[in-house]
Image 1 (cartoon, rainbow, N blue to C red):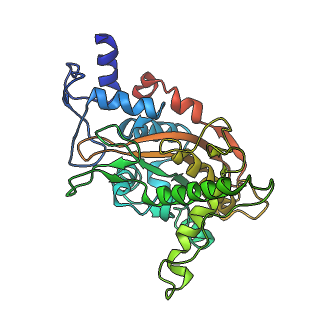
Image 2 (cartoon, rainbow, N blue to C red):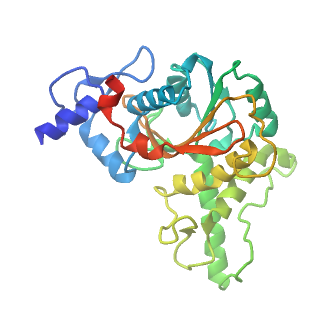
Length: 333
């Protein structure tokens, strides 16, 4: 047990050499954001990994990614970082942490739930900002809270006594889908092949234009397309994992499944449209789930995709296995 705890502390970059207690917060770990430190609690870490296996503390994640990109010839000084995460303020510290290794700033492509609402105009603007002979690095995904009570879908926020919903946009979409599922199966089994639309795009205040809810409308439509509400009267299933039911823990996966086609379409990685990133020598694309925790803890990132593309937007390397099974000795060499 002591060997495991010492190794875990080393992975997280703890400053103290003594392992933390599982019952109390241990020594602080090296911070992933400049000028601050977060306490490492082994019980909190273990509980989070039970809910999200293979998730990495942000300090570990960004260190691995920086090293791997450098080995692929993507210099941090000539690589433009772009992100597509939800508007929620809890995500800004992660973006700042990643940007600290890439000239200190990033291009924002995201809107509600992490969908790339900047669209082709935003992608085009981002592409025009890539340094000469440089590369593009895009990281995207939904986010979810993990409270100190180990509740998924909630998180403690500064200045607020109780944990509250996170991600609110995704939770609202799930609630709409669940209500439509309940209504359909209370009446009768829905007709196969009929597309059910749980969100009608109407603003709560009918005097306001539909534009008021345009982002949430898209979130609901896309998440609906990532789940199957016709297959079972007892639960809503994920299309990517037909045996998995939609709930607070699996919701981020459903949202990730919904966001990814939008990202690929805009970048031209899976569509015949011309690429907007021909200026870039390479494109590194990471998709995953950002896990927000209380202010005293590090956030985590669960990588689900890490690909390298050439200027023709052809995938030339799948780096996810290497990221997940990273050799810490290689980084020190």
